[in-house]
Length: 476
Image (cartoon, rainbow, N blue to C red):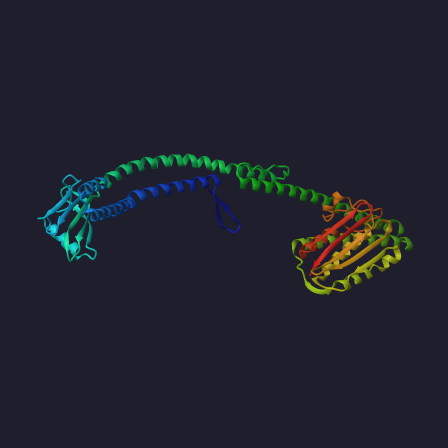
């Protein structure tokens, strides 16, 4: 057991798995031993006595039923011998009609002249069911006996009495033997329990310890570590999960490295340009208005590229961290698409892009209008960047009973099938466009984060040489 100090000042105790398994197993064994002793010392005497009472009552029923049988003596002798019970049958005055003494003269059944006989007869007659049952001391054998007596006939016409007597003392010798056996059983169980529990604790904790060792290696940056949980289904499931987590962490680490490299490259280029043209203005074109204006415009453009990159990174970080809660409102998605496309009029006029919009009709949706607007912008900008020489971009709005599907299609070079699963990853950028790409490479990743925050389905369909269609659905 170890104590871990927390920053809050409290102490949390942790237990070793192997020790805990051993401890629980030993507690279970001690509980079993305690249960056995309780049964032997407490419950067995009660059970034995109850069994004797039930047995003696059963013999009484047999005697009452067979007393008129001509062979009753043989039946009673056998019953007395089989059950270890002394039997005496008397008439109403106490004269003995039949007697079987299996206790060799030690029966507690009184004789006719004994005052107890009269007491017993009075107790039987005064009993509601004309039966008595009591535990008495046998003065002859100095032992405890169980006496059972019942009336023959009816209280109105009493014929006699049946007395049954059995000793309770044989249990004492039996219990002495059992206690000796229990002592050796206890020692054996404790010894075997300790050995077996240590073995089981080691076997159960071994895969966990191996997984823990591998987890330490993973924490130190070894993403090629293999988690081995063979031996138990739960440990194997944990190992499988950790192997998957290790693979995913490795992917994330690689993406992080690529992201840093790509961002560094994109930051370095405009910064270099800004510095270069600032130096040119200082050294060469400071007195030439035309050159100075040209160089200042380039500095402004490169600064805008830097601002765009930083803003995209901040937007993506805020969306994925959940620091930008959704502001849900109702709006007409058809009008929103029309409004956004209107802002691309200048691009169509100056660079020859052809935007077409097909709609199934106006429909109202509920979503975060600003974020959905950002999604549409990013998809259209992506189509502009990769539309190829056709410069044709198609936007479609398809209405159905429970959703609205938005599709943005370009007719560029398309995307290889094996790249489709990573197209929405951070900083992924296709290399097939034959024109300079304007953007940060984070647009589709922002699209993915926004749509996932809305729980909206999205995807891409593409064929090499025919173009790509990016789509998402707004659930009504």
